[in-house]
Length: 180
Image (tube, rainbow, N blue to C red; front, side, top):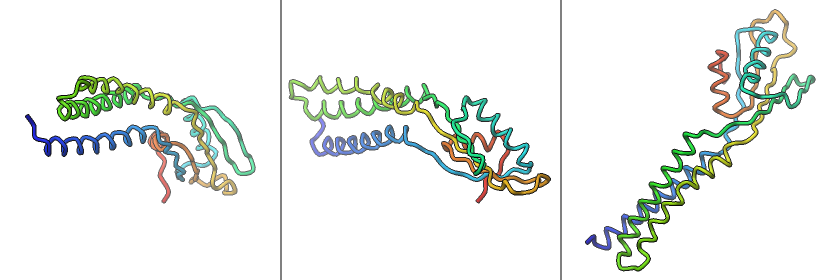
C-alpha cells in the first residue's frame, strides 16, 4: 500500500499537470492575428495580383475594398484540424485517467472509487471544444504601403494583417522579406 504523503504529493502534481493541460487546450483556439510588413523586389503592379491569387486559391473572398487607402479586406473560413482535435482528446483522456488512478488509490475504501474512472469519458470533450472554437471565419487585410511611388520602382511594401500561420505561409509562397 502506498503511504499517504507520497499519494498526496502525487495528487498535487497531477492536479498541476491537469491545470497546464486545461490552459494548453484553451490556447489551441486562441486568436493569433498579427500585422506584418513585407517587402518584395517586384513592382507593386505585379505583387498585388500575386497576393490576390494566393488568397483566392486559399478560398478567401473579397469583403471590402478601400481605394483611398489602397486596402483590401478578404474573408474566409478556416477549417479546424482533425489531427489536433483527436490529439487534444487523447491528451485530455490520458490526463483524466491519471487523476482517476490517483483518486482511486487515495480513496480505496470508498464505495464510489470505481466511478473515478468515469472521468476518462470526458476526454473527447476537449476535441469537441477545439472543433467548435477553431472553425471560424477569419479576415485578412492587405494594404499597399507606397501607392505614390513611381511605376518603374522595383521594390514594393505591403502590410498584411492575418493569422500568424497564414502570414508564414504567404511569406514562403511569394518569397517576401519581412520588414523590421
